[in-house]
Image 1 (cartoon, rainbow, N blue to C red):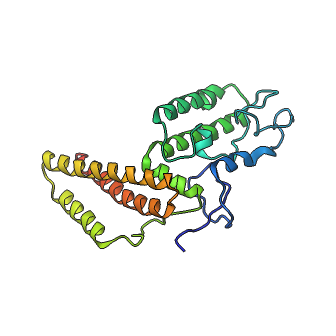
Image 2: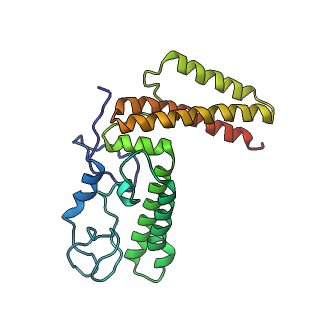
Image 3: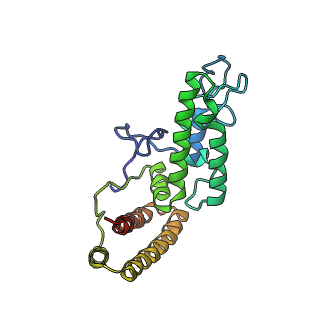
Length: 235
């Protein structure tokens, strides 16, 4: 089967956990609620440490707590668990969280809180970058549903699509003028826009197999975008 189950509890220090025992994946809400039986605060021992309302500070002593390993990126960034994301709201949430947990604000605190702030800040950065870009957002959303797209796979791509990718790569390799580069950029941008619209519809219909195929195509075009950026860099 193309669907491969992955671990339900996401590790907040890495996008794609490896070696996780197979189990039923959690939905976004379930993943966020899984930490309800939370440990006590490491500093004052009061109950409800990492499970407090805002997910960061002990409600009693206000000490910064360790990141909650059950919390998914959508919950962290206060977004609906959906491919459609309000990027303006996402940016505001990112700025809000960095004002709360950035290491610069913990320079005079305990070493434990300094370490936690580093982890929180890294996590917030990773969540923001992942949800901001359509490709990484789609791959992460599939991950939450227990579906992965292996690296370096054609995922049974049709011959016509692969030929299209080869032709664009050949044009890029032969491009020597700014006009030629802009033409290729325009083609790739239009393709990514079309695929982004299509994958959004697939997610809305819970058609994860279709979403998987479209995201694989988006990854091909993303690789071309990276090649374009590299070619623009003066040697």
